[in-house]
Length: 119
Image: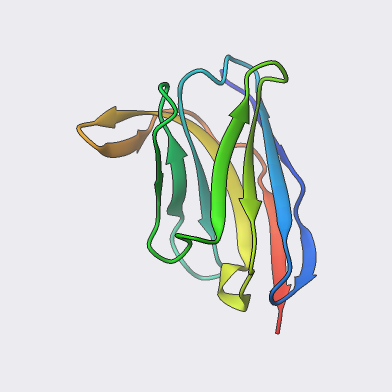
């Protein structure tokens, strides 16, 4: 079973920045993504990156978040700038695949990392 270890979350004021990291137990040269789950809400896709490096973002984070990877460190990142209180939630990384342009999860979930943005 694939293991995913997320880190980098914390408490930050609105307008601040955080960088999340994820180290999987398999190569990051797969389709990978970041999801988040706010209290009382369903888990939602935030950003994904294809094997070839093409990225997609949820409309709510476009222009503020950047997904990237470091193949030497086998780590994927989510750089989050201009954070808003509505970005609060537990953030999870994931390994998946694409059906057309749609990212589909196909791995288990790690424990996630908590991001809290205060107003």
